[in-house]
Image (cartoon, rainbow, N blue to C red; front, side):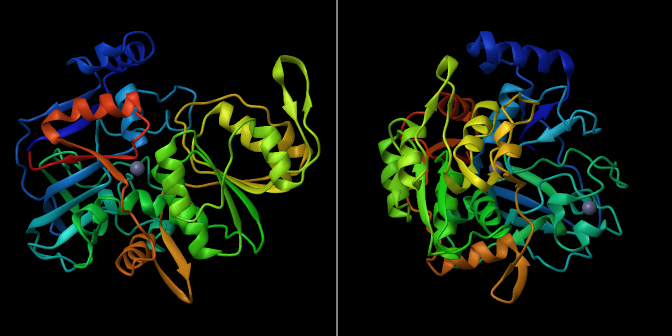
Length: 404
Ligand SMILES: [Zn+2]
Ligand SMILES: [Zn+2]
């Protein structure tokens, strides 16, 4: 079995962190904590409800890039959680079931599937009975994240590899009508849709989508599906993304000085400038989706919100950051964190985000044309990470071809 994973090996992690800051070429040597192992044994299925999947393709996500740079910090909430020695990379995959255990009921050989529950929850580890969150389908909020699996798990792999092993609970069947390209974009699309459904905008809201990559572009579309009567601004200097955002329903591009432009767009007060270009104004957006994350984005997004506005924290940062929290209390802001996907309520139904978004893709409501901009064979994954780090203007989504 061939698999890319992040090795929890402290000297390697320190070298990777050093390389990320001071010597980027070193990231692409054998010293990176992200390793490609081509000689893992093909282990038998570890449980009766497990399946073996042959990967077709896998997208590269910002989280994967974080692993490649080893950005996790020792002050983050992740640090105390005892993770496994290897984190198998790739959670935006499409593949085909090639083997099923005797008690598998949801899949048969030949079914196209994708990983739904990538995070190390009850379903992923085979913990039974599952915790209350996993039982209700909100696996992203699992209480057993830090607990070991009761099974003796071999190297299971994930999306970035030729094959992987998974309990059936971890997977979603892909609808026949979807192409492999749509299937590979399903997971990040679910993040966008979940962000919008978990706290739905009200009629007439003025909304900013800050950061306009795959997730931000998906939020633009999801907003117009869930609440057509809202006005959406996006921030991006990249022409290709501006065009795509407009096509997907964005009403305006925010360009120029972001404080001045926001004040003008939302009917806010004049902008006051203090020391070190420190700016503040009163008024702003009703809601901001921060798809960038990090201290600078936190500070900016809080200041761009109207009193009692809602800050949707979509962009993740796996280390502690500092930011100015004064607008949070001064302007009585609401902060809502978003993690991945789970169970949604939509038009009287209760279903997995994955199943809802598949329907939207099939019915042409949710579009993904033009999102995949780069493709590399799995064996050349380092070139894919080089492009991700360079972040050229046309880049939206890089996909690895797992058959090569
Ligand atoms: Zn992702
Ligand atoms: Zn759980």
